[in-house]
Length: 399
Image 1 (spheres, one colour):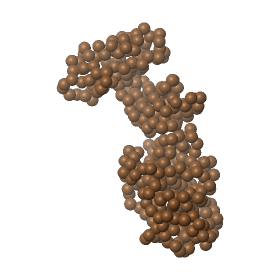
Image 2: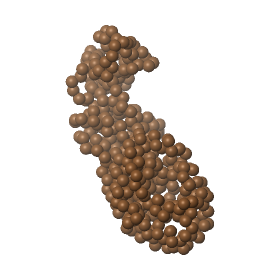
Image 3: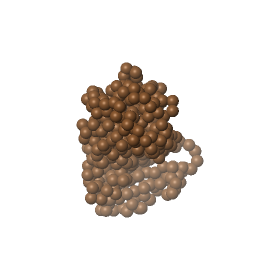
Image 4: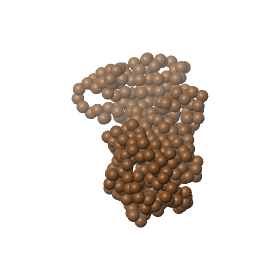
């Protein structure tokens, strides 16, 4: 078995390869995001090659590989060891790497395997198929359990023959895919303590958006634990984008009291959300963000009918992106579990949307009536005061 840490990490990307003339910009951004993600572990050098990147890190390569599983734009990561460009040296290293992989399959009976070589260094004397056979034959001769299976192998030994050496590996850790954060601009995500908005934020980040966050807090009616819950959610999401995450906490109680005093309880939730959109658009200017992200899903709750969403979006001056618009709740829950926000979201805490909640919220709101109700209180003043008194919380990436 091999006795040393991996020499490097082979990082593969998928969608970036389709970006044509813009590809180099996406690759540069991904390389920078990789370096930033690994900063807490050790300095990393990232080399860009066709279809993949080579990451060299001074120490903790295995931990670094797991960290890169949260970096958008990466399709897979392989911890790898380097050999000189010599068939015997490659074979000896392959035996050591393969022995370590076999330790996870300590059972009697046949074990299906294959060797898969890629060869960009055309001066190497063996073709890919010839090296596959050379290494595979040596491995098979050492262990009678082994059966070559090119279609459904249980263990795949990879060999990447390049000008700078041959890299040998036996694992591919799945990356999250998507596009590198920051390649598609910046947006402001309206996040609450629920299940939906963190998942919507994750999906927006996966499509290359850099996010800042805004939440609405109704002190003194709602306690500080609700605010802490949202901070914890943003911290959990922060590992998916470089650097610190910025969360704006907006005081919202005065707005809700004004809406309550107008009467027409059925419209309260729609009016709350219209005010949130106005305030968020103002904060988006400060963040140089060009869209809002929300966790709304069509028909999931009473306020999320097509008519109500139309009423709510009319108050915004920026595009509103709804990544979950066609998701059902079970799909959202599965994704929340996968990204690690479900347990945090499941902690029972009241949020601002439960304050003065009507028994029968309007299902098919009318924009004209929204305008009439908002004429009864000072929309501009309340929005400006909430915006001016917003608290900025800087949240470092989760370790």
